[in-house]
Amino acid sequence: MNVTTYTQFRQNLKSELDTIIRMHEPLQVHRSNGEDVIVISKEDFNSMEETFHGSILKSVYKENQKYHFRDRLKSLFF
Image 1 (cartoon, rainbow, N blue to C red):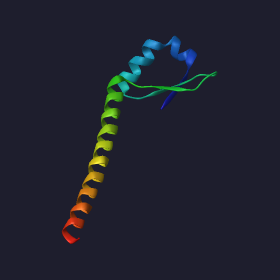
Image 2: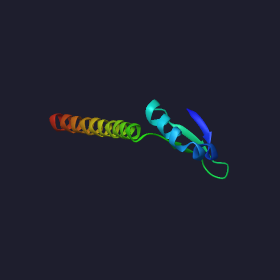
Image 3: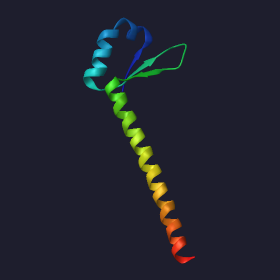
Image 4: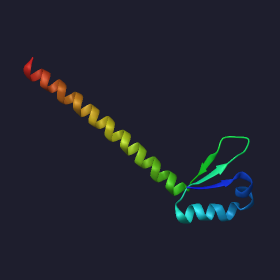
C-alpha cells in the first residue's frame, strides 16, 4: 500500500484519486496531528462490503443449519 502525507495528498488530490481508482490500490494518508486514513475507490469499497456481508451471511446460515440439525437429531432420539 502506498503512503503519502496529508500535505502531499492535498496538493496532488486529482492525480492521487485517479491513481487510486485506476490501480484499485488503497492509499494511506499520514496525518502528523491525527490518525492516518485509508482512501479507496467506491468500487473497491462496494466489493469489500459485499464480500464481508456475504461471509457473515454464510456464517449465520451455517450456524443455523448446525442447530437445526442438532435439534432434529434430538427429536429423533429423545
